[in-house]
Structures are given as C-alpha cells and as structure tokens.
Image 1 (cartoon, rainbow, N blue to C red):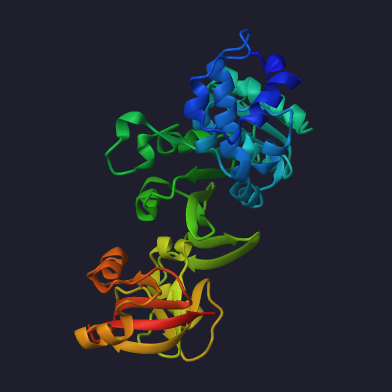
Image 2 (cartoon, rainbow, N blue to C red):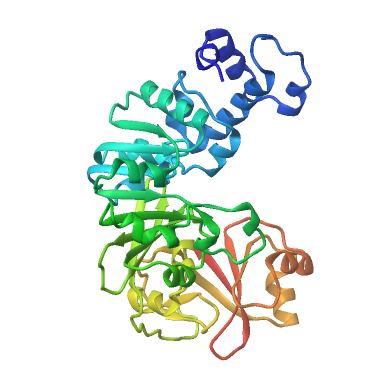
Length: 392
C-alpha cells in the first residue's frame, strides 16, 4: 500500500465523499485514480465507515490509514481499550498481538514504553504511521512473531498483553484457549519468564470455568459489557498467585463504569420469594458470571425461582441492571391473557418460560413498544406468571 498516495487530498476527498454510499454499487464504477488499486480505495471506505462509532479518534483524524476490514472488526473498541488500560500500569508493556493498535494507544498513556508486535508487515507499517499521526511517541512497532521477539530482547516487562485469535480449524469445536494463536496455555510459563503480570483478552463466548481450568495464577476475570452487551473477557494473571480468583462484572453505560466483585469458589446463598414491589433484571456481565446466588446476596434481593434469574424486593435497591416497579401480577391462563395481554402494546421478556418473546407476541397479537414491560416467567411455586411492570 502506498501510504503517501492514499493520504493525498484527492484520495481522501473521494473516501469521505463516498463513505455513506452503497459499496456494492461503488465497486462497479470506474476507478477515478488509475495509479491506485481500486480494491484498496474501496477497503479504505469500508474500514473507515466501520470505525465511525467504534473508533471515533481514528475516524476523526484525516491522516489515518485503515487496514483490511477484518482488522477493524477484530480490534477492541476505544471504550473497552480505555477501560482495559486502566487495569495495568508501569514502565514497559509488550503487546504480543498488536493488530490495529487500539489497545496500545491507551496502554501508552499508562506505560512509559509500549512495544507493538505484529507479524503482518503491512499492518505494522500502517499502525506505525497512525501512531505518528496521533502524536504517540512511546510505542515501538516491531514486525515479527512475538515469541521470537521476546526471546531476542530477553528483557523483563511490567506487563505482557495477549489477545489470541481462534484458529480456523477450531470452528465448530468448543471454544478453548488451546485452540487459539498464540496458544497462551502452552506459553504461560514462557511468558512468566519475562513478566510477573499477564493480561489476556478473550472473546465473551469463552466459558469461564473452561478458562480457569486451562490457566493458572488467575487473580481477576473482568467481564466487560458495553451498553449491556458483553464484549470481552480479560484475564489478569500474577505469577505465583495463590488466592481465590475474583470476577469483576463490569458494565460501561454512557461513559459510566459499574462494577460488581464476586469471589470465585465462595459459597454464596440466595433467598427466594414470590414477586414483591420491585423487579430486577441483571445486566449481561452479571449473567455471564453464572453466579446467580451471589447476585441475590450481594444486592439483597430475592430470586423468583432457581432458574428464572429475575430478582425482587419490597425496597428500591441499588442494582447493576434494569429495575422495574411491578404494577400487576397475573397468572398465565387463557382468561387473564385475553383480558390483560392480548392486542396490547408492550415490551415482552421471558425468563425460565417455555415460549420465546416472538412466539408470545404472535400468539397474543402484541405490538412492540410502549411503557409497559411484561415479564413471562416462573415463580418459586413453579407457576407460570406474567409480571406487568414500569421501568424505573
């Protein structure tokens, strides 16, 4: 890729002018710049468009060059990268899987020196250019395999960061860390020769119990959700750690960070109750933890049923998730459905219920929307019920 040519005003004007056009139609038009590969231009438009919400700092800088769109899709968002960088600090960090460099941009604010390792030479050159455009001076981009780079440098780091990617031949299998590259399970002892602290990012699909069975010395697992969608799991490892690991269920909502600490292997006790005045629906990071009894104990709320994962109380409690005032409880029976549910406008949710929301809406001719929230669930007496609520 000719970076200097891509940065020329005529090319950048073309990219910005066409960023909201249908790419399929644009691809069939004649290339207005014969000296530039048209596929490269199309890719710049696609990648920049994907970066608009995810990477606003990069999108807003006119001197930024974008990589293949898969690098944009796989990279951390600025929101998660900023949070991730707040977890570690020190003199130096090495990123074994540098990618597009979003994480390292924020790590550079926490460390005096950051090394960005990337085996893809073109991507490494693009990232080095972008760091200059962003006036980041304490990140060094090194082309090559990070394992070899660590061996050759033979120096200690305050932190090693790894974001392993799933191997193509692992599709369809249960997601295990040993199925990723780099194989952090196999390399953990090697990494610990060069740093006491290891931070690993994994996709949210990874089962926490499976991850704990593969890794050792885990101190904290961060479940990071943005706008109630789990985006990544972060595994903080400290060499020689012997304490019980902890989960931090993190939600980032409109720039505010909410966090709940759960000690793994601790025997939490849940209380149970029929619906009271308030209803609580845990956010995605709490649900991902799997510690449903801990939610009851930590927030002082009662579970509706062992498998419902909805909670209730008579007082309005602080809670990491959605809160509702219960207006009415009805039994899931034909007459009640006809009187209170059928042909109504409301928001449907199900927990521990045999029908899915779409099936319920179709069956009772319910229109989406409005201020009423209807939770179809099961109570502790194993009765099917509907809770009509208003959101707090």
